[in-house]
Length: 247
Ligand code: B12
Ligand code: SF4
Ligand code: SF4
Image (cartoon, rainbow, N blue to C red; front, top):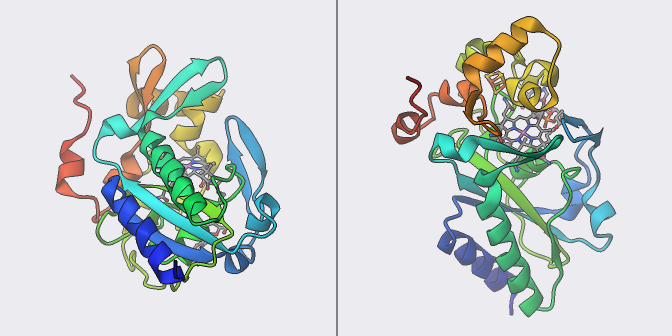
């Protein structure tokens, strides 16, 4: 099968499974991304190169699903320090099928650990731009996107990096953040309520913000803070309507 046909086959598979965005970066370009420090409740460390996961990697396939509803923003506590995210489940299904397609064509595919940074690779694969709330956004879906990558040794045709500035003079997300966690394009993880709800904080003011903006649905289930995403002018009317109703 030609390189173009395999690319098309992957794209068709993603669309069929409800994927919203698709793009490809070369492993060589992805390896040039500056290493970043990643901090979350269960993991802290430096980002890694794609070739540290697959030494003979040629391409990184990036895809994403649209988040329609606050139900996509759930964080469920499974044990004292283990959290799971049901809204991300469709990405795993697409990745599994993609790896099967690659295998049928004689190639390997792997979903890398979190140490492979999804956002800069998505920009490289032409999917969207960094927004000032530090997430990747597109004109069509705004910030309502969750991303995944599959690293492969298949030599697929790469996309051009996304270069348009979608934020321009807007700074609504930065102004909307109740904890002042945002400076344009940079997030202070220790002030972000998504992190604080899982990692905890001794700061009384921030704890009050958790109660107000991260809603407890069941004793173990939180609807994560979505304020900066909802403030974005690219967020669709439908998404805004699908918000949790607090009585
Ligand atoms: C750790 C983590 C968190 C942490 C820290 C977030 C952070 N710092 O990005 C916490 C728990 C707070 C968090 C929160 C959320 N997260 Co999170 N998170 C991650 C994770 C695992 C790693 C990201 C990371 O730490 N990067 C390190 C930072 C330093 O990198 P960076 O933001 O790219 O930093 C660059 C920019 O600041 C840029 N920069 C600096 N200055 C400038 C200037 C300009 C002009 C430009 C363009 C860029 C720029 O340069 C920096 C270095 O390259 C990724 C998954 C993954 N493996 O990639 C998901 C991920 C980033 N999270 C995601 C999401 C959806 C969320 C939440 C909405 C919660 C949720 N519902 O899942 C919130 C959003 C909060 C927010 N405003 O960003 C998505 C983002 C999808 C998207 N559309 O971008 C990801 C990709 C997960 C996924 N698989 O989809 N997250
Ligand atoms: S998720 Fe909430 S706390 Fe975190 S940056 Fe966005 S608005 Fe601020
Ligand atoms: S709210 Fe404005 S500044 Fe923030 S991501 Fe959306 S367009 Fe960019």
